[in-house]
Amino acid sequence: MSTTFPFTYPRRWALSTGMKLIRWARRPAPTPESRRLRATRRQQARLREHAREQRVRELRERDIVRYLSQVRPFI
Image 1 (cartoon, rainbow, N blue to C red):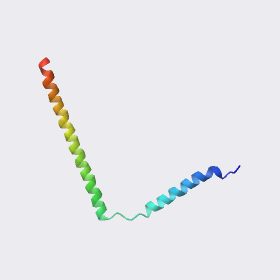
Image 2: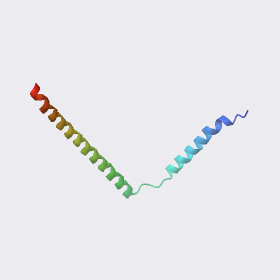
Image 3: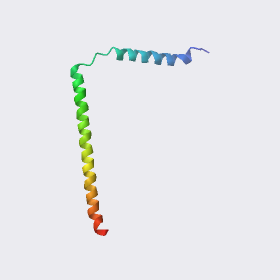
Image 4: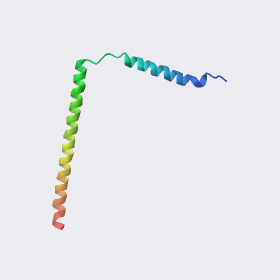
């Protein structure tokens, strides 16, 4: 029975992970244009989230008003 077999998978995993890290470290530096795009996308996402929260709040308030208009006569 070979003693090297159980160690091949962790060694292979370590080598592939090391190569990925080296590739990641050597990636090109972000350009000012890509930074601007990322900031713009982040800002648009924040605005969409804010608009969605406002829409949910308005729908909730509308539902509360509708519920109260239907229930109030019976109180």
